[in-house]
Length: 352
Ligand code: NAD
Ligand code: TYD
Image 1 (cartoon, rainbow, N blue to C red):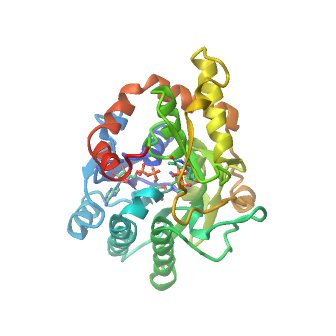
Image 2 (cartoon, helix red, strand yellow):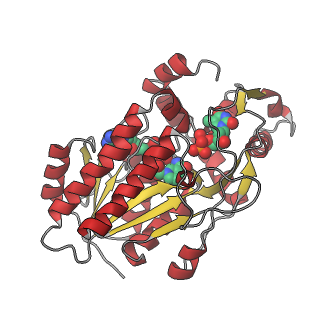
């Protein structure tokens, strides 16, 4: 099992990164460096509980800025990098792909170069872990699963930029022997997810009694995993994963979008003492997303067999934890929904 002194996390103010930093900070005594540009999706207040701890350091840095990234690497000399930072929303990638090309491709390249430079004399025990998505594998019809060996077939600017970064990470392993691992995970849900993604958008719109926009026929399928289960898989990979390998992570929990929206309506109705179907009148079928992938489904036998990873949460429990978090953190939702996000929504998405 690997052990580290200093773990540098990119994108630690975003949804999964925030949860990961809290998780690894509690589980280890590692020094944690969080580098994040604080885009619309990054919220520094998420980590207020640990911001004054002496083994936590935050640096506001754009991962495309090679000079700054190199100087941070020289300053802290991390022996592990966990790379979450990305532009992550498919709809935004359709409206404006450039940021996705910059951050997801050039940003990843910049970090790889900095790691290669830092570890050039000795890379023993070091690790660059790249966080990726199942969306790189494309779209499935009613049957079949994504395996680690499935050929890449990305369809959106988002998934194409993530696929590109995965390939570059693999190239650095094969060409320069940079010690890397990659994980490709299915759709996450949980606390701190920006209310533009399906689950937090629907929860916050239900709370505000706003329309619930369901794309197309609502029958697209996603495999949903609780963020903490994703993060404990990443924790297992950085400590025990084989260098050069890819691991799929999934929730084995396929749900159509319309079923998910109905579940959220019913659960919130119960919690708010309303009739079971009270919120369903808000559901509006809207124009489909361009190039909308039909179905994602992950086979994650490899990480289970090799690393003994198992999900800890069942969907029913974890979705309740998630809904309760949004009910108890309305101020957080208001904060992130105003400002930049609001401007973007008015410009591009006034139908929502
Ligand atoms: P997010 O959008 O919530 O957070 C992204 C974070 O990266 C933000 O804090 C943002 O400020 C930061 N960031 C963006 N551009 C940056 C830049 N140029 N320099 C430095 N920081 C920058 O994303 P998320 O949902 O937490 O996803 C994290 C990672 O997990 C991404 O790599 C994503 O592709 C991957 N992933 C996400 C999901 C999911 O369901 N959300 C599923 C599988 C994989
Ligand atoms: P999303 O959360 O954006 O994740 P991804 O596109 O990366 O899977 O969307 C999840 C599913 O929900 C996807 O099939 C698109 C659909 N969707 C809606 O129907 N309405 C919405 O308002 C959003 C944001 C998503």
